Image 1 (cartoon, one colour):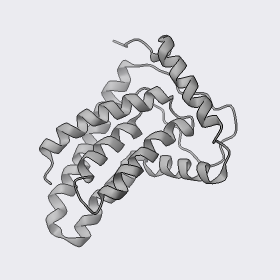
Image 2 (cartoon, rainbow, N blue to C red; image 1 turned 90 degrees about the vertical axis):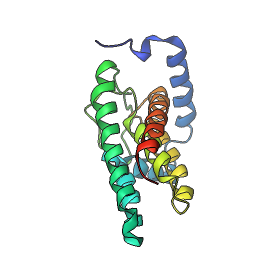
Image 3 (spheres, one colour; image 1 turned 135 degrees about the horizontal axis):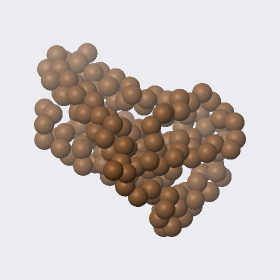
Image 4 (cartoon, rainbow, N blue to C red; image 1 turned 90 degrees about the horizontal axis):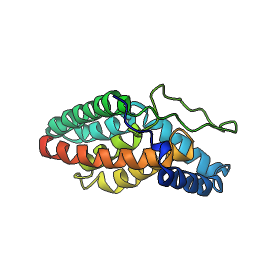
Length: 179
């Protein structure tokens, strides 16, 4: 059974419009556009997170259980968020009024919550335990999550929802995935 559409809540709509207005002042700047589109595309199917999870295996085979666990956790997150949670919210995606300056895959799923934001939080929760990856993972997770509103694939509240769900799933994953 579908739950209420976040668009029907005035406070959510006002939040989304305020964030979109703020982002509009930055959109069109070449460096910001490149960064946002690159971050957004690199996180399709959690690719950037899988790569970062498996890099330590090149250093030491002892990292293998953690890499496998992280990939499994990201797969579970995707099934939960993109398969189950999104089926309960039939929120449409933002309408892009201008031509996008870079290539961008447009998902077929509904907008709420952001799977990119959710997977970024799960990845940061797990990969951030590695002192070599932590300085990269946390800022990258923030850029990936925020890029989704910047490129107008998600409303800002979709990103917040994804971050909250990802934080919960990340906490669960930390209890299950080896350090």
